[in-house]
Each structure stands twice: as structure tokens, then as C-alpha cells.
Image 1 (cartoon, rainbow, N blue to C red):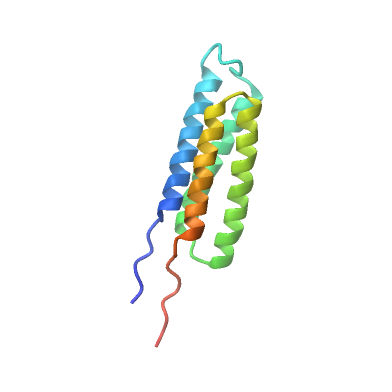
Image 2: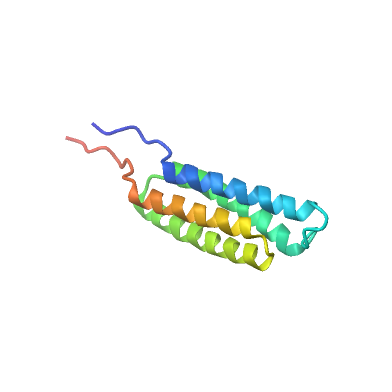
Length: 120
């Protein structure tokens, strides 16, 4: 018997971290006196967090091992890039959110995932 496929805790942590980063980036973009109000860098951080949130949904849904590995590499690059953007913008909380997202990605790699059921 195979257990039903569910979105693992790693994908959920990654999604929550992406949404937290999005909230901080939106705050920085729209709030006066943050130093990056209306800047292109804050806009890039917003877009990157949205893409990471979408990739977290895809990670929870994809089943193939090769596809999961490729998606994890893309997510890792997105996390590192968004972390760097957050640091350049002096928005440390974006960096913290991306580190939490990295923890979620590591959790996703460590948790067993349902594969195709064995036929007997």
C-alpha cells in the first residue's frame, strides 16, 4: 500500500517563507522612508517572492524524481538570488525569510515522497 501524496512540510515552509518575504518586500516598496520606496530592486524582490511561492505550489504537486530535482535547483537559485537582493536593499527580513525558505527546501529533500505504486 502506498500512502497518499500530500504536500510535504518542506513545501509548506517554503510557501510561508516566500509569502513572508513578499510581505516585507511590499512593505519596503510602498512605505515611505524605507530607503527603497518605489525602487526597481524592491520590485524585483516582490516578483522573486511571487515566483518562489508559485514554485512551492509546483514542488508540492510534482511527482517525478528528475522534475523534483530540477525544480529544487531552480528554487535554490531563486532563494539565493532573493536573499542577495534583500541584503542589497538593506531589508534583512527578506534575507531571514529566504533562510527559512532554505530550511523548507532542505526539509523537502529529507522527507520521503510518494512515488508510483508498485504493481504486483
